[in-house]
Image: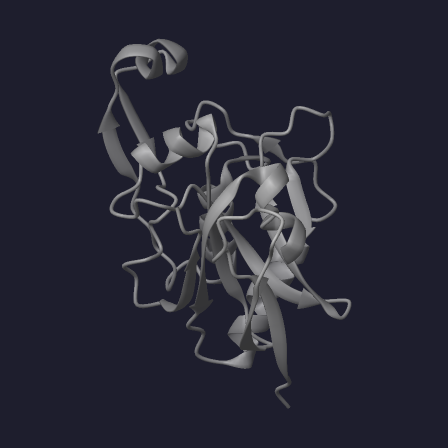
Length: 210
């Protein structure tokens, strides 16, 4: 039996960062979603430069319903000696003041059965006890070194290697990126790699008015 739940998102429609408005959207507690955010930070600006098309998003994570609340599972470079897999409530993931969020969008994973959905959920939860390290050089194949979009890819591949296939993009590197990574080209999964894929259904987006 499916249960529907109204989730309250920070709608990001006010230029006053302390005056939040809320927009309700009906979500299925048994489904799995991915949620994007765009941030006005240095790292956010860099991430957007490596997107395929999306001019707003700089970070992505899974959204699932657990313990009577919606939680975002995502990988961040936090440098605090804890696992870089973070589990945040939506209000924290979309914190305008702390994270400088100006954009978010919501997408549903177009699973074909409850069995497939449950398998993905189990794969997500399987990372909870692992020490995940942010993959700073974007090249290692170590299973516990991941960046945000790579985490989504790895989870989905674990759930179904035949259905979920994603090709890495390649970008020629120059300047500081070439010096930092120590190579001429970067092979990576862009943050927005899932958006032109029929296995993901766009639901809604929110933008902060300038």
